[in-house]
Image (tube, rainbow, N blue to C red):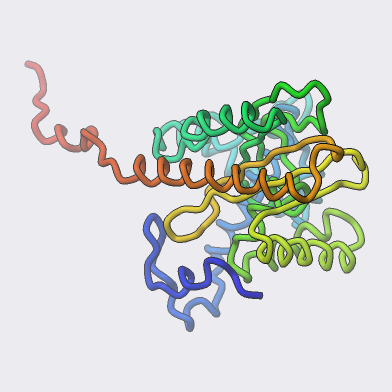
Length: 301
């Protein structure tokens, strides 16, 4: 399987990321690295349960870890304020430190704001419902939407809804443009979540291959046979998926010619969002923060 970002994966250093690990070192998974991966995975599982929160059993089942291991990790995350715990419901929710970390990112990663003009144009031009999604672990997270003027609506995906990567065009567009190794890791994980692992894995990999050949994702869900969705990724300068743009409509409005036309509109707007993303990320902060003045601070006598 040839990944659109294969060339990027061979580079020694990726902007915004760490230097590529030495092959010999990559072959050894340290206990510390495994612990970090597990903790991050638990955060994502709790986030997927939204405001309702997740119980110890749900987090343990979702992670595949024992309850004892899960409890130890959750306790540390709670102590670091990355999680909060409701003693009455005995459920975990994301903690205030997650908000603080997100706020520290500022506008550099605010793709939701950058995509607002494109979402509105797409809704006006297509008259259908338009979604913006980003990847969150093994899921695609809907972060914004616009409804068009056409009176008959297709399936309503709500803002903050999470769907497994590979379910729905908006998530397939994200999955298909990941590196091959990452695609297989996501498919293996989500196939277990979705039921019959063998058939589901084959189906997900088939969607990835079709999306790469076509240049856009098209899905029709068996549960909603009267709807159709078309989606494209928003790619950064290294061809990595930042987000996805998706248009959903009733099937009668989404024949093959209109699918292609919609995909062309989506690609145009995706390029605009990608350009805005790169521009914002290239802006340097005007202040170096507290450390730039700390040395000159004097105590008041």
